[in-house]
Length: 159
Image 1 (spheres, one colour):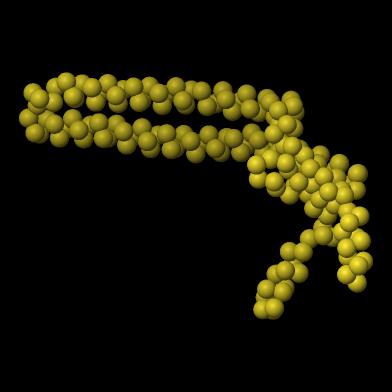
Image 2 (cartoon, one colour; image 1 turned 180 degrees about the vertical axis):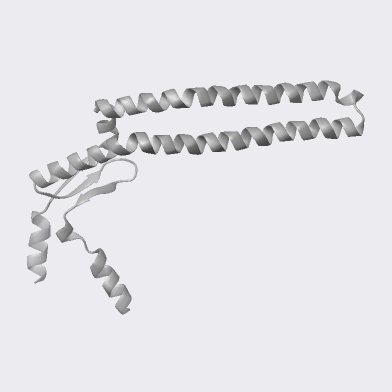
């Protein structure tokens, strides 16, 4: 029985893809990247302008600080802190919006790539296809080789 399992495992084909390379060369992926960059640029410009305004307010405060009474100092300090807080909140909100847009734009491209990998794997009779990137992710696995439910069963039985 063990010998048969080993022979079967040795006859399985294992392949890999380099997904960053696919993304670099697929026209739809390049177009999606350009679209994302065009969405990101105005946000980055706005964030830079906010940071410059805050810096100007800080410099103005520092110049006038010695001539201000305590109440004016507190008010000016509070204004700066409010500007920083609003900028941070705005930045976080826009970052979330950008991530949502990124998912909407890239999801169809990723799905197209995944389907192509699965098709090639089946046509070429690969049992497993890994993504050769920094995470070494399994992209496709023949369902016959999925041990997930056997492992769960064993864990539930306490063995």
